[in-house]
Length: 132
Image (tube, rainbow, N blue to C red; front, side, top):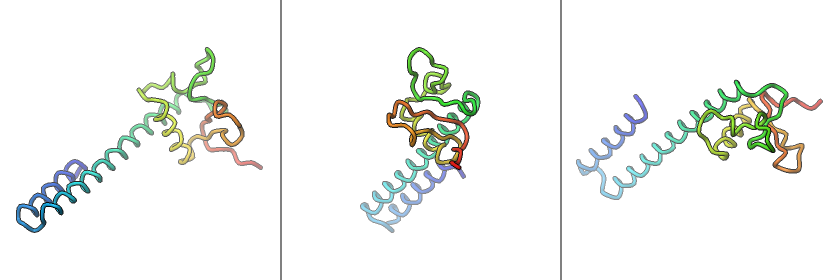
C-alpha cells in the first residue's frame, strides 16, 4: 500500500467516524490536520532521499578521490566546483544540505575544521581520514 493510499484511507476513516457521530467536528479537524502533517513529513523525506540520491550519483561520477571541490566556483576555473557542474536543477542550499547528509552518512567529508574562512571549505569524496 503506497503512502497516498494510506493518506486516502486515513482521511476516509476519519470521515466515517465523523459521519457516524463517533467524533465531533473539532476532533475531526484535529485528525485531518495530523494526517496532513504526517503526509507532508513523508513527502519531504521522499524528496530529500531523491535529492540525496541524485547528488550522490553525480558526485560518484564527477569527483576524484583526494581532490577538494568547492560548492561555488572561484575565478574562471569551474572544474573544481560542484554547483555549476551539477546535472540536476538545484540551488546552493539544497546542495549543501545534501552534502551534509552525505557527510553524516560517511560518504563525503570536508576540511571545515582546518580552515578559518568558509570560502576555503572543500569537499572530498570518501570518509574522512583518521588522524594518527
